[in-house]
Amino acid sequence: MEPNKTCLVISASIKPMACLICEERIFAPDENASLPAQIESVCRQASVKLSDIPDLYVDVGPGSFTGARIACAIAKGFGLLGMDIFTFSSLDLGAHLSPHQGQFIVLLDARRDNVYLGKYEKREVLTRLTQPALVFRDSLNHSLPIYELKEFSVDDMAEYVLNNRPFQKQTAFLISPVYLYPMDCSIRK
Image (cartoon, rainbow, N blue to C red; front, side, top):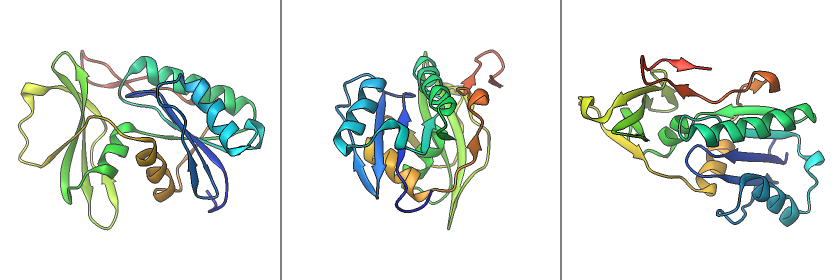
């Protein structure tokens, strides 16, 4: 993304949130509103038409599967309207927020004593060392530091997008949420 290019960033993997980045200024709505209402709110605040936004960044999970499905459905619709779509992982965002250096684990609560897990290394750059996995919390036996992502803010999400470009452009029809299936902990689409 070019420095002054407007983009919309959405997530619903933990809770619904949207923000509009316009000339490095962040517009954030009422975080208690639905995702479509938040999108409408940030566009109104910035006096920007949805049709004038060239890029959409969407969190595809893991996290709330229903939330991620909603965010992906919105992204597909915007992709059909001509927006360029870029995806990111909630665990990658968590790794970006982690204060740890070197190798570490990022966890996100998956309920029922399960956690989503990703292994990362942060030196000059952040590197994902493993694909996301779903594991029992009791089975964690790592000597690595652990960062548990409980929530993130609109500012955290915007900073992540601003500081981690370029992202891989996605085809609207192929966007899908990350679903980690409990039976074998593999990624299902």
